[in-house]
View 1: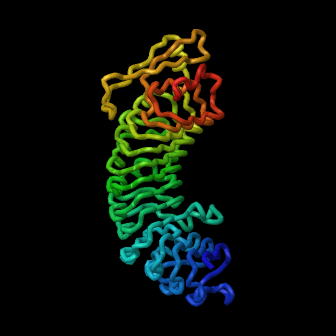
View 2: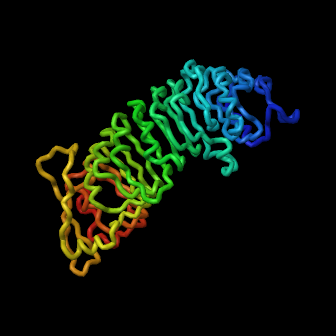
View 3: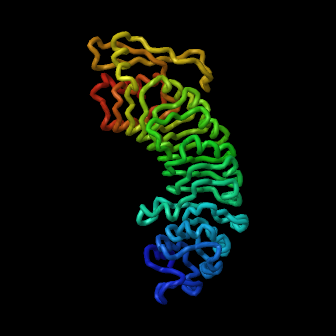
Length: 391
């Protein structure tokens, strides 16, 4: 047997005879590779737990034990010795205890690469705050996780992060802080200055409660020294980017997932060309209309556009190529010229289920890399000729 699922099975360490587990429970399972004891709410794992409980599981690689340790047991801390006695352990799914600290034992666990604090998987979900309630990620909490490459702290009521919180996670490649609604981009960025330079993926979906959010230059700068390729900022009520935010994001960025926000169409988009290596852009489920309802009318009546403010750019070309498009629905249909702003290496653009009513080609030059556009459930009927420049 390779996998054993004991989740939601009412097992405990101090219950009736038939439901109690101890070290001998797993005596004949030396080939077991994955064990799931999650969502057994009377099965707390702390530093008081028998450290030899899983000693017979000499082949165990994946251990799922979220929804077991109530935050009232937080003073007991994590069962660090229990985990360190499982030599091949690669991945653990655990609860988020306030003041829980990764002990020195983690330094002797070179196989452990993945840690997932799993508030989103607590069953029933309304009990999540009783099992994952971290509030503050301190400088000491993660300090010994030098071998961990993938770290997820999901739906764990994180409010703030210390400046050096990730300093000890020296090999971090993937960081997921999804669904910590009290965190926000400002508090998150305070802890990003010492992220591992090799970080490849950062997920910050659903971390804002505010109705209109602006991604500012300070947040972008906090990631500037990483090797980030994938950034997820979905479902955050984001209204716009500051004009210098794009150029301060890592030049290595290849995929930006920003669906289900409140993006409008405005001149900050002209700076998107600074993402010179971006290959995929997901802006689906956004407004993508002009913030000011009169803006479209002004374009129709004047045919003029505001000249974007000058700033630093990663594109050092002598000639700025423009693209033209027509705005439909005007009494006198006019042609508007704006700087081509889609990133030069962009291959995939997703604007499905948005209210975009102007042609995509208005934002790109004739020499572009675009291969795929997803535009279902958008206002294509407003586009006179949507894609004339797609090769």
